[in-house]
Structure formats: structure tokens, C-alpha cells
Length: 174
Length: 174
DNA sequence: TATTGTTATACTCTATAACTATA
DNA sequence: TATAGTTATAGAGTATAACAATA
Image (cartoon, rainbow over all chains, first blue to last red; front, side, top):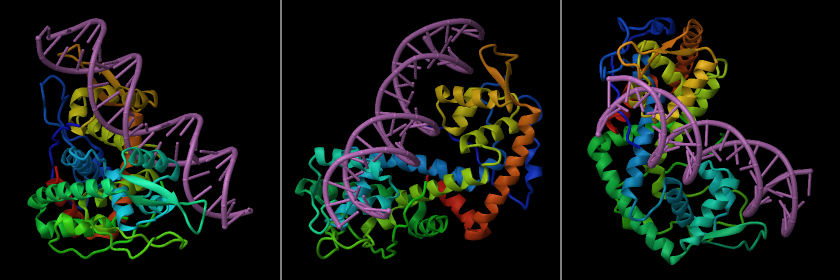
């Protein structure tokens, strides 16, 4: 949960892979109590920055949502069911990139908590039509409020412009 | 691994949480074969975009690195050891946000593969000084080449400017 | 035959507590 | 007493194969 605070090296030229290999530290780092580590090229890797940002994001999400006790995937599923009443499990899985096998216990839990229900599919008796219960709608409404509060804190860091830029850039990576 | 391709709704005004709740779909979604789902506010959530981008990034990383068979954390650890020869395990963990308990089997594997070694700490006999082996340096050099190739594909999508913007924005989220 | 939902299973990642040996 | 490394363990998240009911 609590992660370290790695140093950031911002310099970046047109450097080949070979030039990145040689260690830039004089002697052994050991001995001193807490020498700030050199990150080398790692500091400018998109994948690494993405990883840390995502870890931080999940932590912030869980903290913001602790009143409603929803994890990111549960929140996304409730939102999708609410936006698409009667949707099939398979479509939710395809939309969110989940395995249908993993969706079963996830939905079971939402159903156990009385937030969502499986109804009989009218046209296709293999599939179930998913709906939110009134309690599910109430909880989702509160979750959306909490999520909006959390987003406000993100906006305070990024600015509206930065947030929009970030969304565009992230979606280019898909 | 293979995730779906969610639709994107780009509209965004100053909307309160309450206005996000009501489902925007007329009747039941069920029946049609593959109705594209409505994502509602989910489409513009930073956390959700981050999650999908990170999943995509990890997949791309593993694909790019399959020749050297390194996962993201292993690559980061090798890089940090190379940049900080003699570094202690604890410092690596703090820098990367890993649990020291989880670092043990990770380093064991790198040692088993002959890429890194634990040497005796000179000043403090509790700690071990981590070093890359010659084989580890050779593999890391190749990994850096492969990583540079992968980054080139990312740059093709983002542009140098977009990449730098993305790094700045992601680091603001920490 | 193909698809929906389900069960069983396994592997990775992450988190915590307790132990050892040093300090 | 505090710290570095280790062990054991548990919980999420994610992946595949196989099955029953239905199309």
C-alpha cells in the first residue's frame, strides 16, 4: 500500500540502449543509511510511470470509496448495469476486459449484498438479464458522489486541461 | 490478456453525481446479439483509463521482452541494481514500492538464473550487497535494446511531446 | 456446432505477521 | 530496541479447461 518516493531524473536526449547500461554510480552504494537510489532510464519509462500512477490511483479509489465498500471493478460493473439495464454477463465482461469465469463470483457478491440481480433472459434462455436493485441504485448514487469528490482532488492536481490531456494520451496507448 | 474494446463517450460538462445516475438507455439491452454498451460517466474517469492503459502496457511489455523473459518488476530491479551496485534489498524495495517479503523470491529467481548475486555487506553484516553478474549485465543490455524498440512504438502513438506530457501528468498523480 | 453461464483450478501480485541475526 | 532479511500465509486479480443448458 504505502510505496516509496522514487527520485525523478528528467533529463532525456536521443540515447541508445547501449548508453543506458553503464552504471553511473562511482563505488558501492552500501554502507550509507538511505542513499537515494539512481533510477537511470527507469525514471523516464512510460510503463513504469503508468504502474506507479495506477497503484496510487487504486489506493486513492479504495480510500474514497470505503464508505460504500466498492472496489474499482465492482464500481465499474454497477455503473455498466445501471447504464444498460438487462445487459448480459458476457457483454459486461467484453466491455471491461474481464474473464466470464471471474465475473461469476464478482456478480454473486453484488447479488449477495442486494445490489444487483440476475433475471431470466426473455429471448435467450441461456443468458441472464442484469439489473440493479433499488438498493443498488441508491448505493451507486452515493458512490458516484464519493467518486466525484475524489475526482475533484485529481482535478486539483492536474487541472481540467491536464485531466483532458491525460485521458486523450492514455487512450492513445490502447 | 485480450481485452474488449469499450466504446468511448467524450462529452463532458460540469455534471453533478446525481445527474450521472439515471440510465440513458430506453428499454432492456438484452435480446440483440452484441449491443455496444453505454459507458456513462465511466468513459471519462481517470482511474478507469489508467487501469486499461496499464493493462495494455503490461501486455506490450511482456510481448516486447519475451526474448529475455523479464517481467516489469524484474526489469526494474535489474536496472536499479545496475545503476546502484552494492545496493541493499531494502532500498530497492522502498524505491519500487515492493514488500521486502515479496522481494526475496523475486531476487532468488534472478540469482537462480545467474543474473544477480547477493554479496556480504561490508559495513553491516545484516544486509547483503546486490550486484549484477556479467551474464546479468549482458541480459540487461539486450533488455534495454528491446525496451527501446517498444518505446519507439509508444512514441509513434504519442509523439515525443505527448510522451513528455504524459510523464509529467502521471507524476502529478503520485 | 457454437454460445452462455458455471465450476474448478492455478498462477501472479500484493499484504501481514512472526522469526533470525545482527546492530 | 530497532533494523535487514527471511519464512509462511492469505487475499486479491487474472488465466485456462471443461461442463450443462440452450441455441
